[in-house]
Length: 206
Image (cartoon, rainbow, N blue to C red; front, side, top):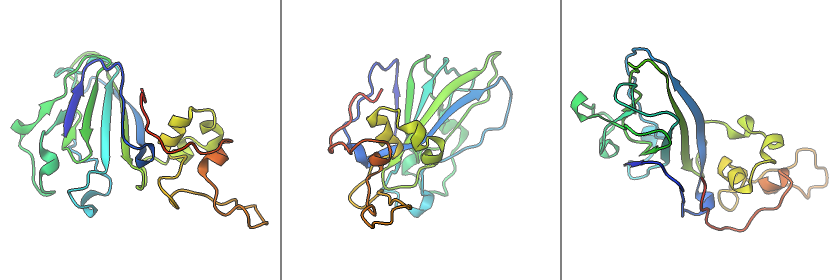
């Protein structure tokens, strides 16, 4: 599935806050060079998950204009329904051309690749991907944003990074130095110096 949102003022998500988390955050800097494209599928779990389960949602935020000349992202609409072995023809690709400040949404099972930049300036993009809360994230957020950094974040962002339980008995931790036996099941938020918030919906993430 594919969406293109021009100049979004608000990105609201009505999913339960613990059902998904940030999988990857990456700044892309595409120089003015020619290169052979690498066609990718980002779906976490790959062919190990049934095709009916889409575990990942990707976004690319345009920090500069994305044009055909500077290599705007190529994708194949409808390829999320294809069998794994199917190959795309060149005429099945389209480009996500968009103005600076826009965002391109596509699910993890969409065939896509970055285009070659034939302009005289770099193309800049911010790649944020989200996965189901019970899956291992592509980027280890707990090392990229350890508790000493994450504790200064807004609670909503902490939870998006994974500093909350995805569900009952999914994501708690134990104090390795505790000798009393009373700290075997602790909510991740405690490590950040706060108590867990009640289950509620996240809105206005951006």
